[in-house]
Image 1 (spheres, rainbow, N blue to C red):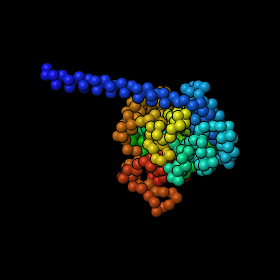
Image 2 (image 1 turned 120 degrees about the vertical axis):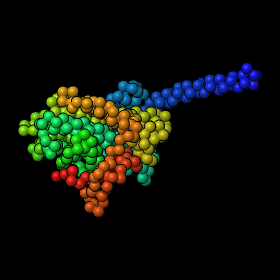
Image 3 (image 1 turned 180 degrees about the vertical axis):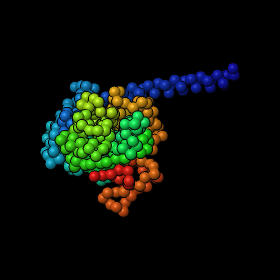
Image 4 (image 1 turned 120 degrees about the horizontal axis):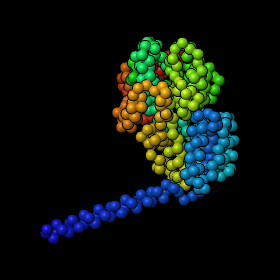
Length: 401
């Protein structure tokens, strides 16, 4: 081998070795940074408690943080905080020297942003809101999982179940109705039930949907009552964007001449509806909360640390970053091929092969009849914010009562 060629090979080996050393040194540094160096106090304000699935998800995430960070963090949790009282509770946590405060309800958002201006040394992280990426307050942040992805796949499973019922002769195609218990006519709710419906249409082309609103996030009795009304109107599958187990309980106890199943949100509801709870989906808040805490420990900007789709001081993500999860498929009532469908669809969602808000549908804005969207042109949900923005009711196939 010529001497020049031999020297070239030696230098390539040396350079490769240096790159390997730098890689492991960087990884070691990254891990040290991730675990932080400053003990901090973390606050959490929720509009419910452990008995309401939505708030329980945040509380569970905080319990995970205590397990992971140990004595490096103190956690202060305040439950069942009404909108009108959140300012007082925020000031209380600020006076207790919290370094970062998480809040979970859209209705808190404007107050939290104003309070953040008064406490620039504290990071305020508001879930589900849409007011952080405009008129930016440097220590105020918003975040949410791109839950329409999970809703769509849950809808595919629901449609598969309806098709199974049609094929077995238990219902006819015209009876394939989904009922939906929604909290408010907000884009967050409309986006969710539209994604659910469009998923169901992929596996049951004849499906149609009825929607009723409770105009509250947390009312067990009202959610249960509305679910009952939808069942009486012939709905076979009931789903929800509301915060209690009321609809699941109603499905389990319904006395009716047609089959009834439930698709949940925020928590697995098989325990309260073992013969009717089919599937569910939820936002996993842990990835955001964990990395926001780590960023605060190290004095780093939250949006520079967390992986996701960043819009100013707002960030979101879906299945690809572990922010959205499917809950257990009930094996007792699962349609054949259901789990394989879920697994395949999650991978397709991660890789961009599923386009949710697209199809031969026209949607209208219920608050502005002159505003409509033709879904033959895809609507890209969460492209500009972590909070959902799709606000159109699909004509002829979704009935809002």
